Image (cartoon, rainbow, N blue to C red):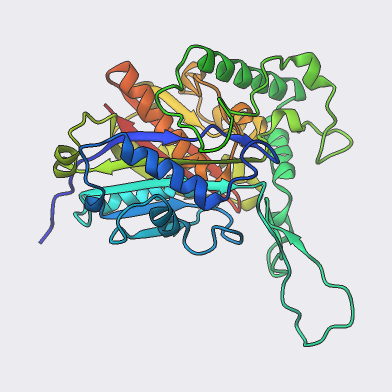
Length: 397
């Protein structure tokens, strides 16, 4: 006997200001970052009894450091929620935060939960080095440490070599594929900083960004108000010394941060006493050749829109996570029907930052808040994912 799916609503969404690598948030453990946004989310809905939260889902891309014991459950305990509230941590690399939202929404839709929290967290500053166990006991030689901050490590030699290229080289491959110049990528990066700086100045983030306890950080730390084509042109290419186009200036930085969303059905909505920001309409995942991971959103977005019965012309706003300018421009080139003016209207990850496990939750919350500000409309959030995936989520109000 089939059961009708329930409508799923996003009641609220919060995030920390995003910290730069080694910056203001580097002294804060990831489990404390996760607990902070969870606590803030609950405090913003005083009518809700926290004991009614059926589950907490958090995305995290690392899991090797201080967040290693199921950071969702750790956040519940550290935030002071009742010990009866469970938590699960999910990992879809850069898409982890959005995967948490999708799993929470799915649990609500099928009736497994009336009220759930979804979010994500990453401290790239505090990502540890790891030392694999030796194949044999008592090795006499030196052992190699691996950084868990970003990208491939301890690669399985059975993987095809082209699949495991550096993420930046993957961006260069997309630039090759679409004929994207250094100047186009730098211009995209400048626009990201300009839009983010303007959004902060205009107070557009005041309703979603919450402070981190004990940290003096008023806004996202990697936004550069004075970024220009001239300043970016001085930067050296990183992944190809000769003929390369990808620099530190037209790529997202390394970051720390956390985000959380309150997700409910009709019964849960009554328990909050609040008007929802948006409704979850559809989601989709897609796979692609790993070296072209940056184009992963292309098919995921098309699938999600088809599920929602929508087209690009129906969109009011679109948050596309800017892992690299080349990657974002490559996706836009494959969506000729999309109006690029609606993409990342308040700046993107090149300026705001990309704390891996948190970014999917951040951009989903951003779309929800933008739809609430508009009063009505359809919005979409999407990310590329290392190892060759894309993830997309459609919201409406």
